[in-house]
Image (tube, rainbow, N blue to C red; front, top):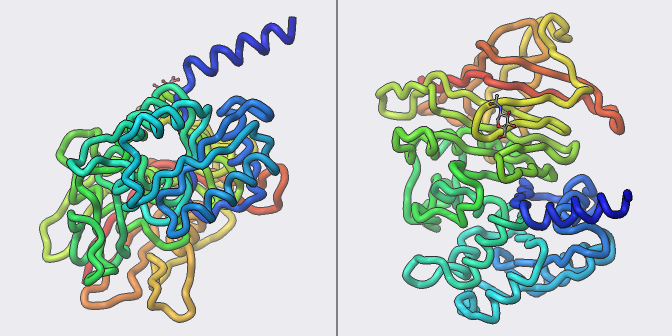
Amino acid sequence: MRLLAGLLVGVCLVRVSADLVLVGGGLADDNSDVYGKFVELAGGVGVAKIGVITTASANPLESAIFYEALFTELYGAASATWIPVTENSGNADTQEIYDLVAAQTGLFLGGGDQARIMTGWRKADGTASLGMQALLEAAESGVVGGTSAGAACQGSGPMIEGGLSYQALRYGAYPGGYNPDYPDDLCYDERGGLGTLKDYIVDTHYSERGREGRLIELVLDTMTGDASTQKALGIDENTGVHVDRYGNAKVLGAAGGAMVVDLREATHVEGTYTRLQGVRVSFFTEGDAFNLYNDSYTIASWKSNLAGQEYYDTAPTSSNIFSSPDANPREDGVFREVATSLWDSKEDSCVSDTYERNPEFVVTLSKSDGAGFGGFSHDTTTWTVSYARMAVDIDYQ
Ligand SMILES: *[C@@H]1O[C@H](CO)[C@@H](O)[C@H](O)[C@H]1NC(C)=O
């Protein structure tokens, strides 16, 4: 009876599944929360047939050999097969690639440069190749995962291709993709990425590289007033987000978190540079569940509401809020650190600024009507904080 029930569940999963596992890059080989979940969704140990897509990589074959070994030897996939589409292979629009993609139970896109993915999989006229159609069908009725570039290409909005937060706030976002003459400017492909994650722009290596400013700016510069274009998801390194077909999302792994950036309530104030009030950001960490489309969330049970239980009397501030690469020494994850400490403090808001001057951007974080949660996860001694609906105001001086 139990076996039968298991079989029925298995059959149902194969038919109704439409799962994404998006990872913010820097995925450790031993991150079984992420890899294990992906293999499980793809059918499980001994069953999963993983298609490995390494189009983003500068060394696609080398990268494929790495993932093939990882999926089969460490995570028990029945098979792992390289889908040999590279930036210049010109084969994505063939029946052979369509069939190879369609034969897998899970597809995993590795990191590198997301522009290579779109060059390799889109037809010259910008439309989807046969292979890309198979990939999109897999996202509708199967399992697709990706890390770094392999996740950044999955949003339905404009696809981010590069840029730093300070330059983004100062100069705005540029369509047309990466421009080597201005490597620090925020640039994007206005044709978008694969579009498997509906109504979201996706960014990766998120807190570590201080990308909060650039993601907010990209939403600001590309939103249309339509509520579906006003949100973005930023994912930290070695951290996964599993999204099901209903937009139910769950954070996988203890390393970092995922931020939902929401400009629906934001006010854009006129100025030479970016001035914004009331951007809402929520940051979910290990074990938290949230819905991407209706704002509901359920914090992991081992975290509790910090209101009235805060550890610090005062919140920290920073003069390098977006972790500038020019700061010496470099500081990773400053915004995450400041926001986390704000929620664990008795203060309601804190004011930080950018490392760069002329102008110097001033970033105010406020608890507003949001909520913060903290706890020690069962298998680590790391204090982990999540928060919902923190307000971010950006000004300059
Ligand atoms: C949000 O959407 C999910 C998935 O459809 C659903 O289960 C949940 O009840 C919804 N929550 C609210 C508050 O509407």
